[in-house]
Length: 338
Image (cartoon, rainbow, N blue to C red; front, side, top):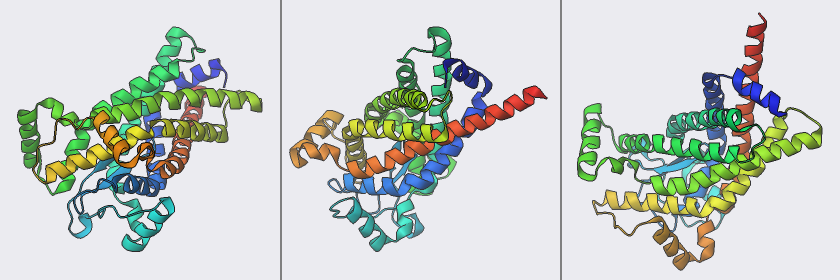
């Protein structure tokens, strides 16, 4: 796509239409990649198991989170991690022991959190990109990096308190009065910053991922268009660019993903036993402990399922998003003609 066309597309597609396009992509991606994410988290968490019945995950491919749910009836989404020897072994054992439905554990909260997070993230990225291009010029290669960093930083910051509140609501049935009491108590005891617990390792993983992902995506998309002799990327060009750029970013940021999983599982272990969380439980300390216990390879636990999850997830998400924007662009052009 040439710079002039790209600029027109951003002007013609409204923020609301961008939000609708990203919402569709988030739903579709969550449905497809959740089983892969279940396996990844199980592999990462088995060296630091949770209390029985205390773990589930949600993901939209570009972002994922661990939360908890009490055991009992249909509320038990995850049993404690088993002794898995690898990706395929984890798939087979989960299906055999818990049924195939367990591969979609936590899908409802996946959709509840992934949709608003993705809408904020993708809409902010496009709006920031358009603003920076109008100020700095279309050919500035660092624009995707800056826009990606700011968009992800904002999305993580906005969603973190909501994630904490939602997690508490899922741990047991709460009335809004009880929920308000919980939040007030949390703030009075630990301050407002307590609502952003787990924010740091999430930012360390997601912000570099975002910068690498968008930079490589824009470069690959432009290169594939030139090789194909096209001015605008096709669905397959968007799909391929998303898969390749997502895979590279996933491998590079995997150690922080492992640390985030470890930190969240430790957090719920301490809270479930009413034990004060140790002050030394920083990202770097956890990383050193992982290396000491499992070697350097421990920082890349769950690499294969993360890779085979991220590649299709990024590909589906970005191609669906771009397809949605193209659809709305055509609708806007038709309205202008009539």
